Length: 134
Image (cartoon, rainbow, N blue to C red; front, side, top):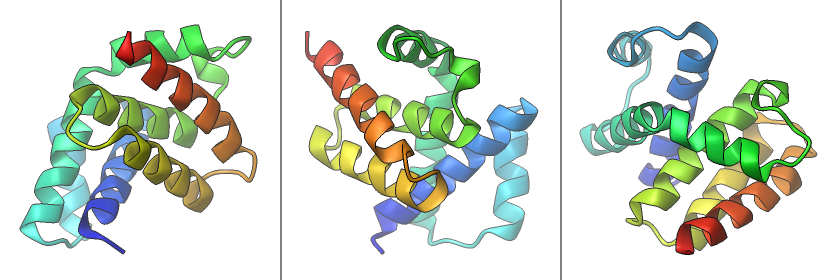
């Protein structure tokens, strides 16, 4: 597993915790890193993804609600919301090729969500990428 993939997994776990508890992001990070071990570069990238996703969660959630026809955000599984927030944040930064971001998000969905999640998330992420290009 690449270090960046591991960073994304860590960021997803922190996002899930934040979504469930709505604790301060700094508190979520502090508690998470007490039990998780990672190289400094892995940890730094995970923190960057987590903090950015939380900071932009409101805007990202609005985009997801617009793109996920007939689905309210609160109806989505918490892990799927977190994957979408993480991937759309990373798409918006433009630092990683979009195809890589989407493939990584789908891998997270395969590992942490339901069997139906990857296809559903792929559709939303593809639409999000297209909307960000325009």
